[in-house]
Length: 404
Image (cartoon, rainbow, N blue to C red; front, top):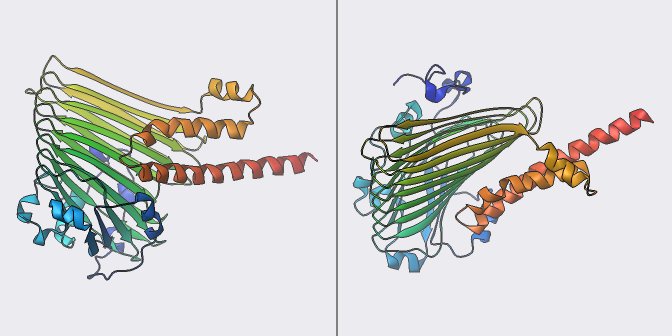
């Protein structure tokens, strides 16, 4: 398959031309290690299962006795019940070169199977750790939520300070009347390139809630395909991202309505500081058979620096009538009227901007599938705002010394 090119619409505005694939190589089988996010897992309380994937390899998979008794499976796909049927269930052919590389060079995928009628009361947490310098890492997670079943699946993608390429793939199917709540928290190191793909397929009257937090990486790209294939299927996508220094955070979304009476909503919000960049391109596609579709798409961006840059391109492709569809996007600095309102009541400028930014992300944080995920997002934003405040305090202090 040909290497992606920025002449292709789905790669427009990306930095794909900077990627040198020859710098990276797949690694041999990995052993278990103490992960750098282990301390965070206690925030989840009881968990149905915990899986650790190190440099693409499953190195640990444990499940609670209650979840196992209920029928949950979380482990290598080769040992899963009817595991072969999971392969390609959500996406038959990879959408790009990196999906093909994932299938060609990736270790055995992780399977998470929730049988028909099973409703898990605690999340399945998957830690995806990259700590191999010069590594090309290809984790693949396959999720099946059966008919009238429900599950929360949380992926925590992290790394040490290595130079690496990560091409993760998630393929998830939701059965009739099923409900999947999925979260991806991406906190990769500053020298990691990520080129990921998420594919969701939702059957009749099924429901998907997908949440993403894009926080780390040098260039971090996630393509999300949400395909609603059964009457009454519902897909809700939410994401928050914060860019610093010269990061690029890249999101491509496809809301594909392929059945009548389907609904989808998308809300992506980002803040960009320093010389960071964000890219959002989204498509709502309504196929001829998808009458009475309701679909909405919103992307909001706040520029915190004159050197930051955001590209936001929402699109509609409607092939039938009797639909309700909308799209909206904004790129702007912090609202001056809102900031002035706070300043006029004695709130210092730096504190006013911080309050506005915390409020800006709050509706996305509230959409996360688990309180621990919302707390992770709020803590990560607080860390970044602390750094921003420290820089502002340092700049004002230097200016004061100069004036003196």
